Image (cartoon, rainbow, N blue to C red; front, side):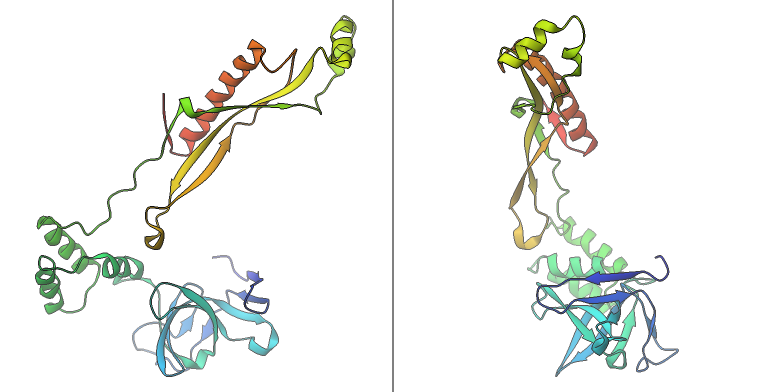
Length: 273
């Protein structure tokens, strides 16, 4: 992380504020105990929020506005674990602070296991078996997943299917090129072409290839939903022909289809005939 960065945030629900990556001392965290006594962006912090314990990820030390300067901007986990929101927390109210990627494993990995593991007659014995050994960690998750899946119950989500698009779905897009460079027609020997352009017998076009991609959402809350996104080739411009049905338009489209297929492949999208 670069030293001394400052990030300004414009929020719909909060005043405009800014954070820096300056470490913040946590006076209520016991030095020598577990975890950290200085908070940095990305750390997991545990604190009292009213009459309940709250969990959040540090966004940074607030530098603006002045009435909350010095506090920690925190992305707090909502009560039902389905959302988060920003809070400004006084450092003295932080009870514990941890690096999510610590020597005990990844916080995110355990939370994903905790949220996704099926709870049924096949899985409960394996979960109890690991809990009897103590607290869950990455290794315990791995052991539990291996044994649970050996019982025919999937815990880990299946790998995301590769996005595929058919080349036959490529759409030809033809536009008038009103900004075409006509200097070539003004040269000697092209008088007839220039006249044809002026009287409308010839027109300049731009030719592109376009395809719609269906992108699946990975979010559990939106599982099964897809986002439709168009992707287009850069286009060949200044194509001078009599009309958009000219065979040369089709030749230009074929070239653009090749370029679009290369673009899709570079993005990891499989192009089928």
